[in-house]
Amino acid sequence: MLRLFQLELPLFGALRGPAPEAAPPEERRCIPIAGRAVDYTIRRSARRRTLGLTIDTRGLRVAAPLKARQADIERLILANAAWVAAKLAEWQAPEHAARRAWSFADPLPYLGVPRAFRLAPGRPALAVFDDMLILTVPRPEAEAKTRQCLAEMIKREARSHFGARLAHYSDRLGVPVPALRLTRAATRWGSCARDTDGSHRVSLNWRMMHLAPRLIDYVVAHEVAHVRHMHHGERFWSAVGRLVPDYEAARAEMRLVSLQLPEI
Image 1 (cartoon, rainbow, N blue to C red):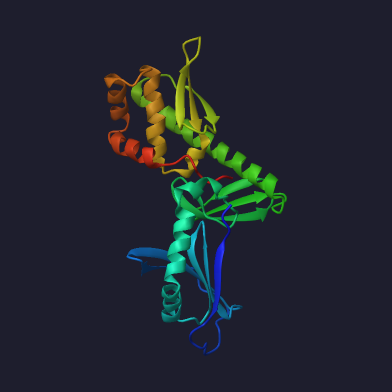
Image 2: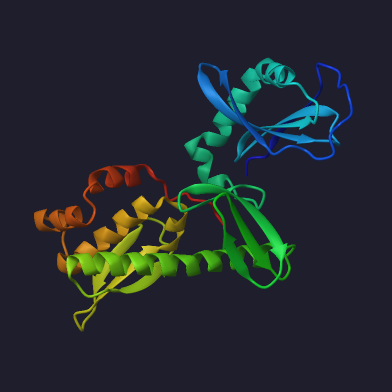
């Protein structure tokens, strides 16, 4: 597993004036490094007296005192530009993707949106907000059971979301709604099978809940089209096109999406 990379450095400028009682929200900024724009996040704290650079799955983050000047922050990043570029490239290299473990401190992509993840004690439940996911479990400190609970909660959401989209596209195509089975397949997003009684069963990878809804819709529509056409011929793609007119764009994007999604 790649380790987290950190630099702790003193401030270039002195801090003056009383510190405010509460830290401002995280600031998102961008800075040019090695010919490309690099996004980074600043988190300020009243307890800090130094600037710190951290690079991990979340990218470049700066921990700063409340009164740290933006000019000092940028000067620090640029002074360590070679280190920043090298470590960002190391984290982003495809050969390391499978070795990165998702941690509870990382954002979690949910329906295509990276959302901050928070844990709280309580009965098992997953609350979904625009920019945050809150998982309540009886013992948040029990990591293995908490991860298992999170996976089960996402599966529950997947069954609801996928089921609704299956019904929607089946109605539009005029075919019976196939039975739904959730999988965690390593090499495919979905499949459709015909049972001996002539009914159909669609298997969908529950980890698609990390992807944007339009991509999920393409996969669901693809499998629903198989209910009528168990092949990939012209009539099949015509059916997919009736369900998802811009399916070619979604199809091309799905080819670029790796199944190396966050390992919960």
